[in-house]
Image (tube, rainbow, N blue to C red; front, side, top):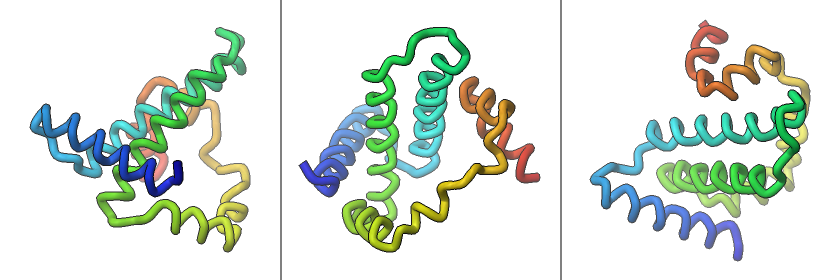
Length: 127
């Protein structure tokens, strides 16, 4: 299955589920869910770092898939074809310029993500 097909199926599933609940597929809702899913991914990865639990590769895969699912909805709302965007990004090697240690990667940042307090942390960081 190509990314375009995954995007189409993800959007269809989200719209069906949300319409049953009489909720629109708006970006603010999707962003909240994305932050939650990224926090769950961070939690899984930190489990091993913090020696809480052994790493669960299957769960990490599920969390990454959840993030892609939600990003598909955001891309759809902006009429972005993820196939085209990813191919363009790889060809231009744009993603390589972002591979550096971010200044916000800190214990406080990871803690905020893990405890679903990212929005408060980001507001404090950028104000």
